[in-house]
Image (cartoon, rainbow, N blue to C red; front, side, top):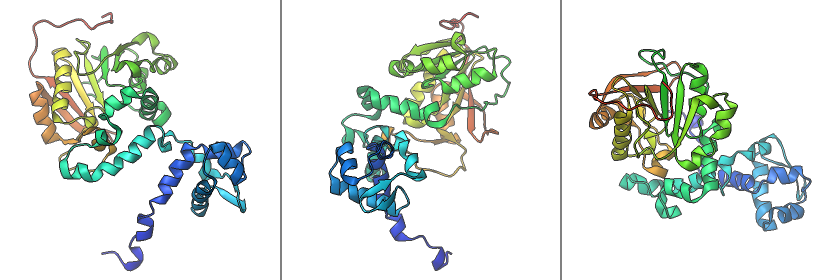
Length: 339
């Protein structure tokens, strides 16, 4: 048991003002305004188009928490903590705001097991992104290099990469993961599949990675038939965004498109049976889940797949490899690729 001195401070746990004040400061770009010379509260409020007294209260709270400095009454300076507020995830008018407000639906999710995102924003999550291209671009940035840095790790396959000539990154966003893998495996060509709006933002990443002539872009839903005949279909952080029925549909499309000897590799959305359970924002925005390997084995079976391997790799990621259950007599050539 914890001693009294080790118990968390309830006032600190219930300090809801600080994270929201941080988000307001980030949304209003206050560090940038102060850097541009708006130090006096009246001047700063005018530049930010805010109520002076309300903004003063927000800044006063943040000063007390060590964010911003107040060298004189009503005059504010930035500091290192304030300069870190340029994170787009804190912006209440972008994807960060969507995520922040979604946590308010947690009680309904716990009671029903279903996301309530639509009740807050008027549309299901993916339809909402499609209706707001700027927010969708923020989301892509968070999922790609701008949000997390260029991925630089490999995926260990049971049979190695020598036999892989073409891979399809299904729901691969703007291509950061695919570009990283092709950089490590120069004999492999890639196909990037994601919605047209996301694919339209993939050009710079593909070009800058030096893989332009080895990557084919497909702007489509992964609920539609996928480019056929590839050796490997990668699902990275895709299945965790969808309930069981949609998970089976995505896996089925991969199974139908893959070569008889092909692989479907899953990162994210599956965990070992004894792994701890965590609550992620993906379950609240889209109704997704992380299946245990036992649960996933049944879903894969429904999709026409067998589990070939499931293990935690040196990267720390839990990776599942699947194979089509039966061979098909007529395999299609991979679209847009020369074999």
